[in-house]
Length: 113
Image 1 (cartoon, rainbow, N blue to C red):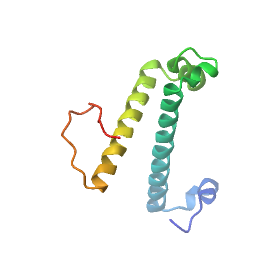
Image 2: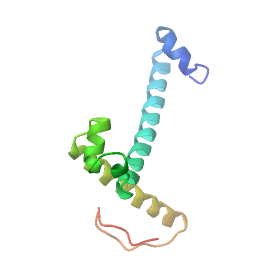
Image 3: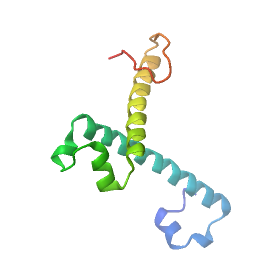
């Protein structure tokens, strides 16, 4: 599929094989996951800095509902996942440096800086 550009895919998808379609879908799926992660990390930043107030919203839930039509429960979940990913990044750093961490329960914050 490396020979097929994204614009070629959108213009003439009927000429692609099943494998080329599959590879394109996988690429799009991975791209979507990266963009979603950036979105929830930015949402967490807006929440932690209370930037939603400067944007005319009374809470991060109100902001997310107003601009993205997200229900409060989904906003809470995005923030929870963004915090967990932040902790996961710290764990990866410790593993790369071969530092031993005490075991913690899932969801318990890490005390590492």
